[in-house]
Image (cartoon, rainbow, N blue to C red; front, side, top):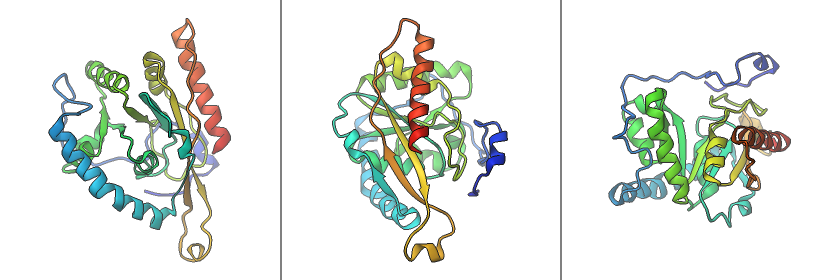
Length: 248
């Protein structure tokens, strides 16, 4: 489903899914599940698939389909610590654009648990560094431990704070707290990223109905944590939201 959203969309629940996946399988996200698998054998095959196949294929595909332009790479050039990256969620393959923007720097992508209930797809996206967000409260602690450790180990974890995918929506929607909670708890910067649309130009405007894409990486935000943790999370969330809204 790829359609343009209108002003009427503002009346919808902004974190509600508009795309529903086929989810015939079950997945156990308990204490035995490796949310961030950095074992040598897994990493070898993951890197082989990611850099040897996915990266070059998606570079070409995103250029052909979206004439993808990436701006602001200099803002993550000197990123030496773990970090939370966040973006609006407006395309099925916008995670691939995030990956291309980070280049050789590893980034892990949080995704809905349902994506890991699809045959074959769940194995593929696991190798491509997808991290399922559990829906059961009893499994959340293992997810949290995995993300915390990854951040402390210097890894980048990507979140969609809007939670749901709204194809081609051209505003920033309400944020959930999760990503900013991790940033505050682990004292790591947040890298805001905006995915915005532009009208096709040149010959593309004659055969392409949907808009092309520009991805812009903004300057990392290192927040000074206050005594009140909840207030810090809220303030960081609002700061990131406002700067993304200003750049969309």
